[in-house]
Image (cartoon, rainbow, N blue to C red; front, side, top):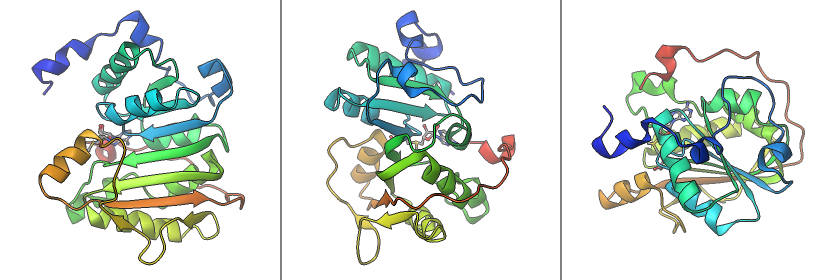
Length: 234
Ligand SMILES: C[S@@+](CC[C@H](N)C(=O)[O-])C[C@H]1O[C@@H](n2cnc3c(N)ncnc32)[C@H](O)[C@@H]1O
């Protein structure tokens, strides 16, 4: 159900539409054309209400911010925020994260990727719906520049540990920035997301991962299989 406050994002103004890219294609993006300049590019996956992405864009006007989000109305809300902030460095896509990474993001183009509080699918029988799989992380390895960083956060610790485990099955591609256990709890964050604030207010401990892409070429990918509606159902 769409809340009263969100109803106004059912339609888009021209200014909002200009920040939202066409998701009905499998063409690789030309980032220089998309942003009108060559600049370091960051990606946020599942940006929700766009608070983090908007803050990041405002604090790094010299960098390009890409966002991909599955829920259309949240894309419009984030475009609204970006227009309000005069953020010319934001481009948003209403697409499935894995589809976007595989088909749209150019190889070695990203210098940061954030996945902050992905839908947790906490029950054992739901876990197959989690999208940060080994295959997804291999696609991410293709999309990241050497030295680029991948940041992941979740209050569902077994999701963070699953991602940690999946990354360890791609030997040589990623360097863990956290020594010891390989994760950190409750690190201070400059721009907390909506979910991060909720979860902290509930007293949850947040588990963070940070990985750096090495310069080892990423290996061959499995043939693309579109997620079934059941896989992506909320
Ligand atoms: C729990 S919310 C967190 C939103 C935001 N990152 C935050 O921390 O406030 C998860 C977001 O990921 C999006 N999402 C889930 N699966 C996705 C997918 N396969 N592709 C793109 N976005 C997805 C959801 O629509 C939702 O907005």
